[in-house]
Structure formats: C-alpha cells, structure tokens
Length: 265
Image 1 (tube, one colour):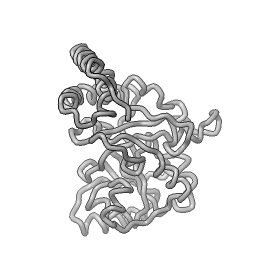
Image 2 (spheres, one colour):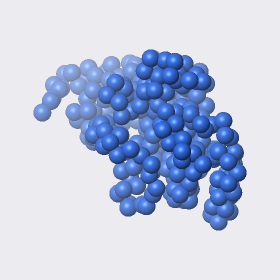
Image 3 (cartoon, helix red, strand yellow):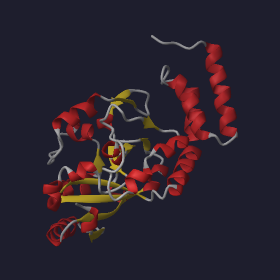
Image 4 (spheres, one colour):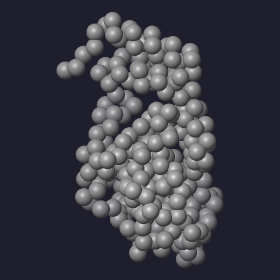
C-alpha cells in the first residue's frame, strides 16, 4: 500500500492553503488530491477541498465561456424520453442498479471498454466511466454519424454549461472519445485548452489528423443531471416533435422543443 509520511502531508496542506489564498483553486485541489487518493477519509483535507470547490468551479465556468462553450449535448432514443424527463439523466451504472428499462443503440465492445476505464469518484472510491453522464460539446459527432439511420428516433437534450457551478455536481473532461486509449482525462482548469475546439467547430472532422476521436471529446458529469437542468429538446423532424409533445403533455412538463435538422446528419 502506498503511504505518505506526516511531514509531506503537512507540506501538501500548507501548499494547498497558499494556492487557495492566491486564487489558484485548480492547483490547490490537485495538491489536496495527492493525499486524498491515498487517504480519502482525511477530514482535514476534504474540508479544505470543499472550501476550494466554489472558486474552482467559477474559474472553470469562466474558462468554458471564453471558449464559447455555452451548451452541452446529450442524445438518446425517443423510447427513453419519458423516463429521462421523470428521472433526469442517470449514469449507465445507476440505470442498471435500479433496473430501469431503456432502449440502447450502443456498441457493446465500446461499452465494455468504457466499463474498464477506472476513474476516482468524489467520495474517494474508484469507479468507472459508467458512473458518469457523458455530454458532448457539439451535436454532430462521429458517434451520432454512426447512428444516422436511427436519427429520426433520436433526440438531444441541451444543457447549459453553467451546470458545472451546481454544488452537487462534479465533472471531468476529455480531449477525445473517452473510450479511446489515446484520450486523456482532465479536471484542471488550465487544461481546458486541450479541448479540440477547432475540430469540434469544424464542418468536417475528417480533414484533421485524429479528427474522429477528437470530435468526440466529452464532458463527464457526476452523479447525474436532474430534469430541471434541461434547457430544451432538439429533434430532426415534425413526427418526433409530435411524439414529444404528447409525452410532455402527459407529464405536464414545460420544456422548449425545437426541430433542427442541421443538428443531425
């Protein structure tokens, strides 16, 4: 078992305090995590990390805005709409834990890879990608393209990027498809420049080296996204809009619905 001596623990704490006083929240949290990865129940470190989180989140959001990342996108099959409007967007692991029925168009080999990718959770335990809700920085991704024959039955939920400010939300982001072995995971605000915005905003990802992986960059949200956070629903055609109107009427929910074929292929 890896351990850290008491002197190094105290030095980490003092360093984190100085970083917080200098408004370097992201670096402070990284410093605290060095100890918390080994001693997740260390109350002193957890309290200081909680104190740094609001500043860190605000910095993170401001940097998202500087990249013109105002919205994040989640897509699913229309069969799942009513459940999502009732329960919010749950992680795959949570859906399976509560035995919630859903329609999936995921590739099992990809899902198995995602299941095997380990990530530290806010409580100090180790989870995997399926403990997070995956959001994209654009609607038109290679993941959607590979399901273009299903697009008449697909809807997008648009979530404002200020969700990162919510107290209960934790997040990480990637520079490409999270299932790829070439992708890196980040939480540091200074690493937001690693999001390949040139590829994400381009008309075609195929003109870029590694464009397919890069276009699928993700914002991973933990533990879930409540329905109250849904900004609007986007669909490809009027038939889908009619179906959604029937669902929200039955649930007595008010949410904007937009038919935007340009968000699809």
